Image (cartoon, rainbow, N blue to C red; front, side, top):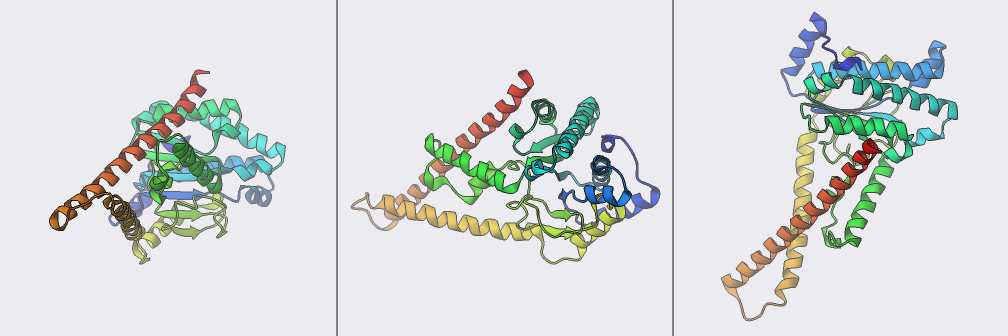
Length: 332
């Protein structure tokens, strides 16, 4: 994957990038890669060649992002819906993925040098076993790196992701790891495949479409979403223009919006805690005044402490489950 190579921008590109980087920049950018088949038709080449060019454009785009200081990129590489395409096209895409993940592992020294953490987001069980093993190896070998992150959504849809998170929470309740009242938006958020990543600041939807195609529907609530041309036609200057728009020309700051939303969620959780504490107070008799306030605050603290312990134990068990799945692929 050529994006890992030490390739410099041109002088004018570096100059423009440095000017833009002097201001606020998005930390996490997501891409819906679309239009490869239309590109192939337009250029009168085989459909597989269009997909191959799409992967080359991904490598080029990732290199631009690294040079611009974007530390996290998420790309929509293969939707679960894509399995409905012709067998020939699906087989071709699987072979392309097989080649690219193999190449990625061959360049693990460069991954280590640049501390690139690879995450593959989706239902890996839907993929051919050999590709599952390649993915598991790439994820496990780079999991400790923390300088930059590449999230590849493969065999993924947002509905499938949210459904999986709900199933995991239901499992946690059934096994007694958490209680029904522990189930909140925040807990579901931490059960998503993307739990280790901040939400994207910017979603770039290629191919000129405005639909989200079942991609990160939960995570892009406060993201800036911008449609652009066909994926294979994206240029460095397109990215610079988009980043200029997001950093200087829009008033809805994603971080501020997320902060306000977080405050509202905290307020709702606080109200729920107080309701629980009021119910516990019904068992306390013959106290009033300051003593009553102390007991009430004690119940609230108990509620929060116990919930935090339960949810952390549950999330650790979920993390172990997912990591064990990857490790089993590498050992079998």
